[in-house]
Length: 273
Length: 240
View (cartoon, each protein chain N blue to C red):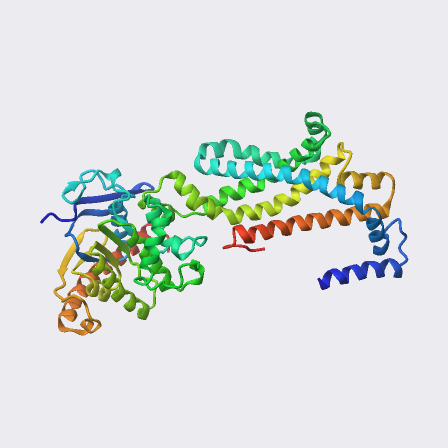
């Protein structure tokens, strides 16, 4: 079956001063339609760069290829193909919850009235009923993330990229949001790539977990998650889960140490501490 | 409010206690009485000057916002023209006063031009600064939605710039009023500047103080009107 999205030989270097930093090196990944794949990696491994390439904000170095539904995508055609949710919600303080939720759809060309109607119908699913006319400053962190997620879901694309959306939330809220996200996703059946630092989260949410290496980043490990769906909270302590976690911890720990050493090396060389 | 009453009492008391001559500092009571006696003429003067200031301020806001937008998009233009903008503010407007009257006549136009001249710069600078406050991440996000440059300007950059623009308008409003008054000093038949000048020449000290108080009041009212507008339009970020 043709993968929904496939990356082949994607590399990226940035010029920093006189040096060239190789952020990504021959990244290859493939997602089937309807997959929920999580990506874990140490800080600075190039996750953000990878996402910027996937949404079309950055082009890969020549030679890198990106396929959607089997068709090769020219780098400048990617913008607007993928629904992106960044780490910070970046809600507009001058817009109500409702108008923030429709922002992406509105820019996409959906008439405002129609978009508002659709958003109103989804309020319950996103747990925002009663808050549609509130402003972002009046909401808690978890609610703001739900508004941002609603905005992302309303931008109707097959592929969704979520960059650590729950990173800033406390553990309890995060656990609730994870379960809630899976419910919403199961209703919508999009293909999701989800970045996280949290290994529990990566295993709990994903069909597969990809581990990214330290810089220059590439996919070092891929782990299948054979846990049944829908995922119940008690799965976090099941033997299968614990086994997966053990494997992943080892892989990520390894890369984190390399990334940390690399940063120290860099600081020693450049002389700033 | 309490401070105001205290100040008024202090003024009145001081003139009585220290027996200050009416030439140096008239009692507040006589100043107020003079103002009240000439209230019709005073009101007309206020409206005239206010009108001149508002026309100049409106033009200053329009030009300032436009310049800010253009400079934010075209770095080259910013580097070429902004130095001249800055230089324009270094020269005291009084130096240009006579020239402006020669060019624009004795009527409202010359006063409005001076008001414009003094108010556009803060607005331009704050528009540019406000637009630049938008992070690359925010712009990037909108681009992933398929937004073009104009959409990003209209939906993201301008609203972000609105609070600092209003802060600049607060400053610009006061400058515009001063500009209109100073403009009247170079040639006018009506307005607060005329009242001030006439009182000075005729050595009508009480009248002079009345005009000064009125000018202060007008400026204050203008300032708080802008603040009220800011609370309505850029309500999500209103610091005084």
